[in-house]
Amino acid sequence: MGRFREKLEVGEFVITGEVAPPRGNNCDRMLAEVKAYASVADAVNITDNQGATLHLSALAASRLTLDTGLVEPVFQQTCRDRNRLALESDLLAASTYGLENFLAVTGDNPHAGDHPQAKGVFDIDSTQLIRVACDLNEGHDMNGNPIDGATDFYVGAAAFPEAEPWDIQKRRIAGKIDAGARFFQTQACMDIEVFARRVLEIKDMGAHVIAGVLLLKSERTINFINNRLAGLMVSDSVAREIISAKDPYETSVRIAIEQAKVLFEVADGIHMMPLGDIETGVGILREAGVVSK
Amino acid sequence: MIITTPKEFDHILSNLRDVDAESVFLVGCGSCATVAKTGGEPELLAAAAKLQEAGYTVLGHTVGTEITCNVGGTRSTIRKNAEVIREADAVIVFACGSGVQTVAEFVDVPVFPALDSVFLGAIVRQGEFSERCRMCGDCILDKTAGICPLTQCPKGLLNGPCGGMWDGMCEVIPDHECAHVRIQRRLEKQHRLQPISLPPKNYGVSLKPGHVNIRKPRVRKSLSDRSESGEKNTARTQGER
Image (cartoon, rainbow over all chains, first blue to last red):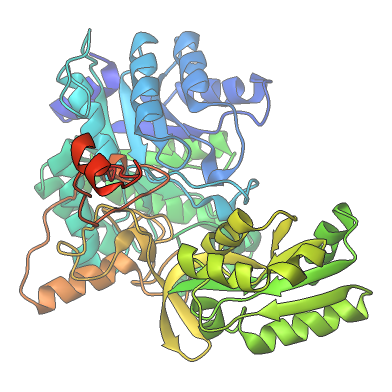
């Protein structure tokens, strides 16, 4: 059992980060980011053609990350680019590579990416993909046919605690837990009060919650999130506070520290999204007392 | 109804240039394309004028009341116009892809589509159409309150909403309410419970090309019966798929 799974299951607080595979085969930058996370993170998510843009396969990048011996990868799969047969086959491949942590996500629509002519596959959705990974763990494929050698994935899913209407979002989360999700990594926290309340609701449903903390950095970052990133909106009050500040970067760091402090009390972990400034992200976790200085 | 939209006129001209065509015959559709205002009489007359302006000879056109995808009806329409069509270098069809293929079956010269077939839709009001069905062959509207998530959700997710939903609205088409929110709300209104999650769809049922035959199989007569009646050996069993 990997340390990431073990810590979550025994109730120890975890830290995760996120790394995008390269747009090419030069993995130097990616591996440098993995290294930068290694001092504090229990696992690093390896994204799958994020934003529907071309990157090195998450499967290859997850294996490269595992091979560093520095930190465990969380192998991500979207439902956008592959049908059920390819997803199952890649999961089996992941298992032979020794990849254990798995996150199933829907994926952005191809229209939003750099191959807008591509056909969005979505043969199955993320809830169904969670069940597929659990099926393989039980020694059979999604049709119930036995496989030669069961997998042992620790299966997770994405959640969006601040999305409205919450009752519908919560129902989807329940569906994912019912399908076999053991942990959730969430969209970034905006309104800490609402967010914290809903993290507790998800935990009550029987899953571990790793809460997203995003470094908003600047007006440009906020505009990018509001206009380009699917489903995430920076609230007016937070945006105003950062944009009108004398030092917006410093203010966004302070907001992230405050969020991390609260989440350390209510969540099972923090998923740090420092948008490339990994050292600052690590500093935020240290300042919040989430990791030792 | 099959919704069609016109191809760029330059695309049609480029097809004609590829086969060195000088004269053309136009075929419209008396059904869907007439309603969609893409392949009825007025559209064919307008296209004929543009083609003539571009230097082509339009030998004639036909729309009639026929549905172009009706194999028997189209065969007879083509036969009626056979002499003119024989003189044409190409035929341009203002119908859905099914109509174009039906015409192509009975014509020797190159047949080109003038339209793109975009979806199976509902007529919202005259001139406005909206996609409602993907014809997946495995209908789940019984479970989704009469709203098809495969069609109404741009990602075609059976279980949603996805992470892009914001304030009940769709990520991909921001002025559309999320299909999964609509499904959930309608089910609640009807006091119905949706299953916690729907299983993957069975795309195995939609083997392409589709074929349905509800005609009664012909009774195969014995050889002795046929020889007695002098009937030729033309009976064939009706295959089912």
